[in-house]
Length: 441
Image (cartoon, rainbow, N blue to C red; front, side):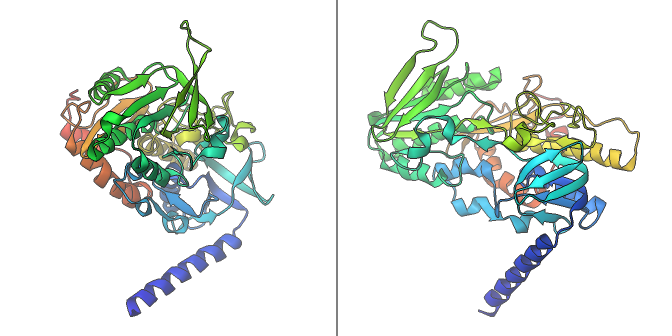
């Protein structure tokens, strides 16, 4: 009882100290980081230690930080939702200033960020790591039916627990899984939950009563051929129908009907196909946040316009960006953000110090652990710039492997909380040099 009361009082004091310091926050910083997700904290934690207390501000409106890579496991009933979240105040570096508001504008000419309350924060250097916006409104009828009528999404903390709940209710019929045409984060997640659903239906003895259809707006199941071949083989072995160039455009929840537009240049291009469903997992289209898209730091597509190798802005040299909101042309994953953060931090620190060292270079590294069942996983690692596999281990990671599952489900979550968010995890490059020095596979 005494220990519990002490812990409670300690937590209360920490929360009050954080609130008090935020309320009295100064309006000017050496470095401002917009975004308190994985990418933003990987940068801000390191730079706050390097630059000194309260020289770095983190602008992040959410009071809860989510470890989003675990959402697939939650949706598949393999992890508890509580394992994915912690208070934001507990993961922001104590050396940094947390400003718990949303950014509404970036003005690179005056070096200021406007906050939701209309106040402005000025910076000498800016890192934009705001993530990407889920656009549930981009599909007709989806906002009205998501979270009910058998419709769920692992991409949202609001709806991820509905996935497993609705899957358990399935007795037969069509189970549909979708992938949109827009850039998204974790591009493997739309199909991962289909494999977990297949396994669940088999365990319940109802697989013969359920037709599983994966609909992707893209022209192949995975961007990199080596892993595309692997995933096509997995889908075929599980009797999962893969429908390419089909983009979800409408959901009628009351009728339990999903409508897809056929893309591409084939004979059916432009037509629509309506499919009844018992369960529907939707990956929503995604888009840059308006405050970035409408600012001078964005490119034509609305992402922060940075050099793909250095992460430095192409027009404003005191601005950098990484993660999902950046224009870096690679798959948007936490693994990519870790590798990008190492390059960004080195280049930014060198700029601050006036160093003439050659710029560090990001090679497009990213990773997508493709869960295919309990204790089975294809560990895709590659460069989004070249499309070439860039595997850490000596075995063929395109094969389903229990080790890859254990690494993803149990080891990487610990690395995430204890190292990445503290700025000390830069990806597996150093491990690769030891366990796969010849670059096998």
